[in-house]
Length: 196
Image (tube, rainbow, N blue to C red; front, side, top):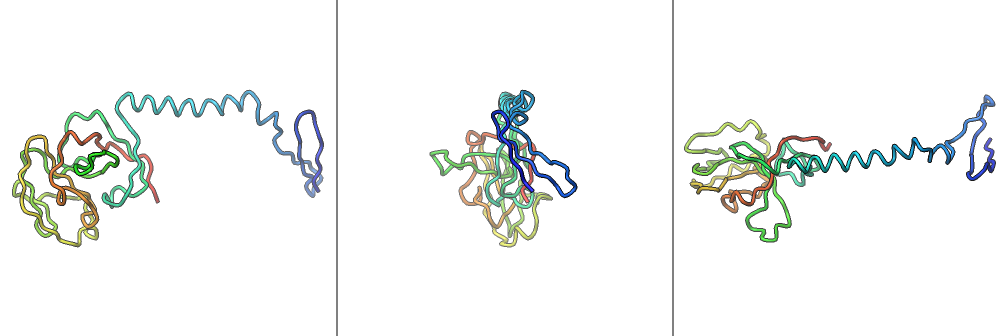
């Protein structure tokens, strides 16, 4: 059984359950109490401050789009990148503008395989750096079935060789060549949300 009564400036609805107890809903006065309003205003303020602090130290949240970094990073994962990185090493995951996109309208996320001065070669899906087969524990064999090969290439100063971990579905240095350092604007630090 439902009753309604006009009380002061708000509508108060309540129900009487089978035991005869009155079960009320929150009133507008409760919803807009000073305590509730403080909470409503406080949370966005904290979020804005956190984002500001994040950016002031060079950190930036980024959403992963695409499957080029499977299995480690999935489409929809949320990661943090460092925009003030000092050094780049083999194995680092970086965010950059692809060299063929002069508008810088999209970003790519790949792993550094070769650093300046390295010679990189791919033989039937296996990667060699300076004539040594590299250990790649981040690769899942089911994403490296094509067994592509690539002639060796020596990297000039300030150039990096990058590849996606999903070798069968990645546009990377095997297709468009080495990546100039100036196009790299972030280095992966951590994942804070994993898409299902």
